[in-house]
Amino acid sequence: MSKKKKDKKLTMAQRADRHELYQESVQDSEFELDFVQDTYKDIRKKKPVTLREDFAGTSRSACVWTKRGKDNRAYAVDFDQEVLDWGHEHNYMKLKPKQRERVELIKADVLKVKTPPVDVCLAFNFSYWILQERKDLKKYFRSVHRTLNDDGIFFLDGFGGSEAHTTSVEKHKLKGFTYLWDQNKYNPLTQEMQCYIHFRFPDKSKMDKAFSYTWRLWGGHEIEDLLYEAGFSNVRFYVQKFDEKTDEALDEFEETRVVEEHECWIAYIAAEK
Image (cartoon, rainbow, N blue to C red; front, side, top):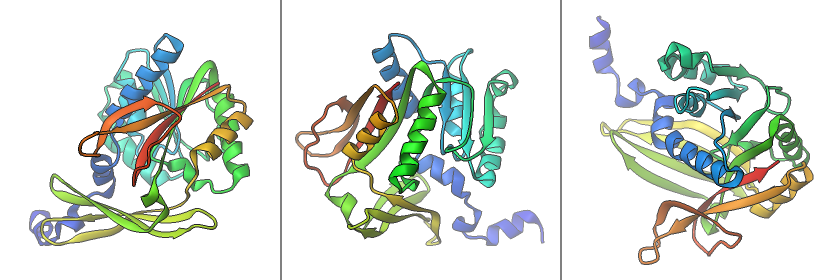
């Protein structure tokens, strides 16, 4: 049987690539890097040039970063060789040769990795919540502090709200598939969460548990305390804005220390060295 005929017998879920689906449904590198550049420039009055992407996964942000300036350099760190290999093939190899010279994909533990000093370090998509013990998160923050330049800024994100403390399934219909965020288990005593990402397709096929996460639901004040203990000089919160009439979340963030009660809110955190 030819490959073409064989492919026709496969369901949409069987033909789909989970990493590609993740990038399309979860990761908005352009928006995130706009925020990083604009915020860094607003605080430091200059543009950042070097970047380290921790828990990098497919290394998409690191690769996008190098395309934003001829002097930009990036390091992408992840402990999963399979996902780094995917990123190498689908993101890194799509860069121009000169751009590839300014990107390094590194298989390593973020608690132990050593890279050259950088202007900004990123830990987005709540990835650092895999570190559930206070001592481990503080150790990671100290590691980031050491790798930053004197004017460096560490960018993280977090979420909260009443829905964050419950089990729920959130659905988003996208082009060609539906993305489901499944907060499957939650322990209020330990703040431990078990979350999954599922995908559904028009032919009724599905990809269950495409990604699995066991996290601790870290609170903003807990994170702030640990950042200060790790040596950071100032911590800023940029909270998602909501439409006053519809109460829908907007793609806008404002610096504040007060979060209004919403079922779910997202915030960026900028920790200055």
